[in-house]
Image 1 (tube, rainbow, N blue to C red):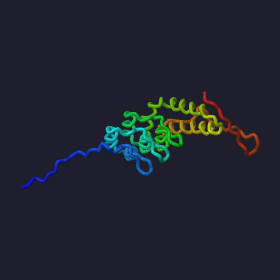
Image 2 (tube, rainbow, N blue to C red; image 1 turned 90 degrees about the vertical axis):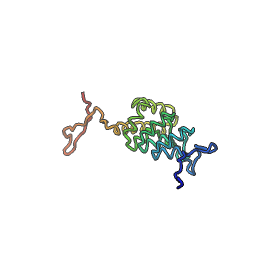
Image 3 (cartoon, one colour; image 1 turned 120 degrees about the vertical axis):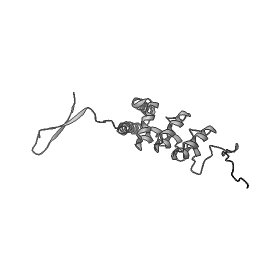
Image 4 (cartoon, one colour; image 1 turned 135 degrees about the vertical axis):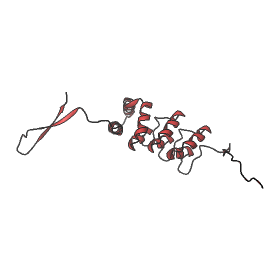
Length: 186
C-alpha cells in the first residue's frame, strides 16, 4: 500500500513579487488585510518588508486608518509597533484617531490617545494646524472641527461634556415671555 499523505509545505513568496503591489483602487494587500483584521497576513507582509504607511490612491487612507475605523485594536497596535505614523492624514485631513472616534471604536480611541499625548496633545496638534492655515475661512473650519473632534472624543470615551455652566429660568419681563440666563457654577 502506498502512503499518499502529502507533506505540508508552507507557502512562500516569490522574491520577485512586490508585497506593496496595488489593486485597481490603489489598495495594497496590507491595507486590505488591515481593514479585514487579518493579523496573520499582516505579520507575514510586514516580515516580508511591506510598507506600513502605504497610502491608498482612493482618498489617501492608510492601513492604520482602516484598522482604526473597523475597530481592530490588535491590528492598530501591531501597525504602530512596526512604525505606522499615527499622525498621518487622509485627503480629508482625518487621522486614525478621527476614524476611530467617528465610528465609536472606544478601545481603539483609548489606545491611540496616549500615543498622541492624550486629549491635550490632540488639542495642541489641531491648534498648530489652525495657526499654520493662512485662509481665514479654512481657519474657522478648523476651529469648528477642533471643537467637534474634542467633543466626539470625550463622548466616545463616555465622559461628561457639559460645561460648568447652567441655564436658569427668570421671571417673565412681559406677559407670556420667559428669559433665559447662563449662570456659572461656583
